[in-house]
Length: 329
Image (cartoon, rainbow, N blue to C red; front, side, top):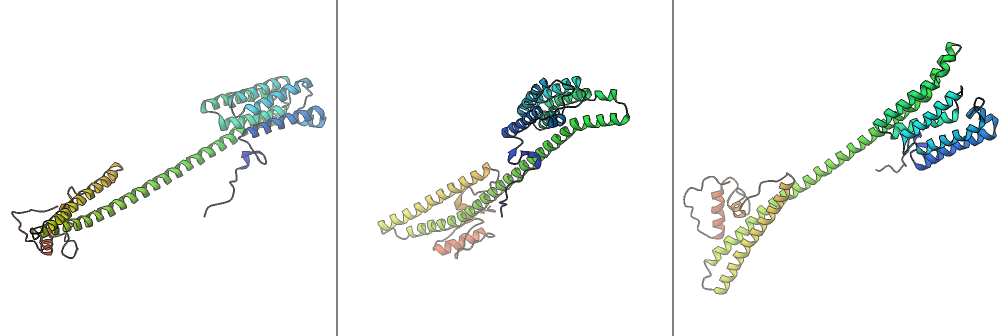
């Protein structure tokens, strides 16, 4: 029974409820959220103290920071390496000018790193790692002015967390997607193989039925031809009846030939897909050989000569065998 429930995506696939992360709407939503945080920091001091502390930077730098962050959010899917490089350059510039870590550009950097792990090529990811190392070293400059071991540990943990977490998370999501894709491809391959096997089995069964039908009909048609031959030897005084019997015999031979051609076509179709079975070269040989029929229509496979004699007796014809026929196929 099919599952009618809608597909539930992991939580990391959404920016907001109803907005997919891996979409243009997701990029625009992230850019709008960053711009809204910049606007809030401009008008509200409490928000500014948390999102974008500007004590060490002139407030005129607020909008350039917001603009660069918005550009990073909009370009992270199409140009992930460039987005990470731009975000890292902004963080390096801010870290050189200000001691505190500014939250707004840091969030843009985290978003760009996560997206780069999803979209960047292996060579592009090498560029991303270089940008992360460079930005991390500059961000860790407060270590050299720290007054205690606790401050050093706090700075190292913060820098490692903000730069390493999105890398690990994005890598895990990418590997999950690759695994799902591989499993889907494997399931599709299994389904195609099963369908091909089923089609081959159907073709084999049809060809087998056609072969059986060929044997039975060939035997009947050959019997009709033999009976017509026997009748023609007794109706020489009636030309009309002779012509009718001759036409009957000719029609039976033509039907046998057409039947053999049809079975040959079926055999060729099976040979094309590697499932061909042996088909007799001459349909008449089947009446005389392994599929011969006796007087009541039953096959006589083990004694072909006895089968021929039984047919001759049924048709009222005297049968004479000259020479040793050997072992018939």
